[in-house]
Image (cartoon, rainbow, N blue to C red; front, top):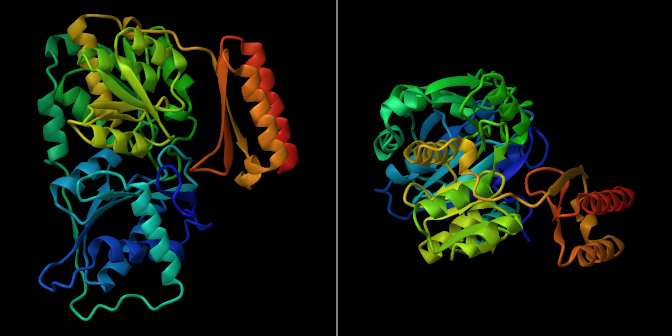
Length: 445
């Protein structure tokens, strides 16, 4: 059983388990054992570390780096960087492993660790289980000794990196059309704040208005970004923009607002991508709206569903050589670019489709989603969902919605919450089911 790793790495409140210095140093030692240990003393392992603008990032970077130095591993610091950029650098620099210190869409008091293999992909379930086993064993033994020289530290300049070059060269966007297109961007006071103006304005000439682009170390995702989609919708209407792009703190998720202030989520983006390339099969998760599956089926496109988490989507895509995958929450994976989500790249792809088709952003909506009610219920002990009475009531409510909708209840992999999602045509019935279940979960915690 995994204890540290959730749906997207390790995450928690700073200085509380698991985001303590001791645990993070144990994670670093496990990373060394699994990904960096080599009997050939001529080969010096390399670890790449980047982070979002959270003020706690330096503390964790220093703690983990010290472990790597002691084991004879060189550390290359990328500084403030988006998660997709870190993944791409891990691949291009042939690093043994890439470490992104970020809590993604979570607020500033959180931090976390996302890991990437040398190919730029997120870890598989097996690799995470292996790390947890090593971590468990490390508490009962001495750390691995290094009899050679200690590791060295260096920093990386990102001004002329592969990431910018690839993004700026891959899209065929008419500059005249771009200059006539007003785009509002919610940067979530995160990593993407450092990318948007250079990419969207300087490279392509869009008329850009940025909001929430003043990160101060603590305001990341604070009442902004993908977890607060109404912000981008309101901004698009206020500034009479053609489209809005909303990111999360580390830049791997995106939601889009059309000119009428209505959200296009990961389901709608996935449908657009599938239709743009005449795909036969795409990937999402169990959270994907039924309307997406029905629309794709009518177009002759198969939708495969995986467990929640973009790494599960990515894993299926790699094994089956598929180009597109997404989560409704805004992780969008384009395999020819990167095997993990990249919000900025996905956003540019949608802007390219919009301009080439000469359509309004509202005309990119290919289907209407079934009504959905989501509730995140703060609960410290997430195992409450396995209590017999709770499990029985969940099954009863699921049976009531059978044929009319669906009910998904799952512990959050990133926060102390139970996530409830009900989907169907009868909003009143969905609301009753969510309220009923919320009360039961609260009473049993």
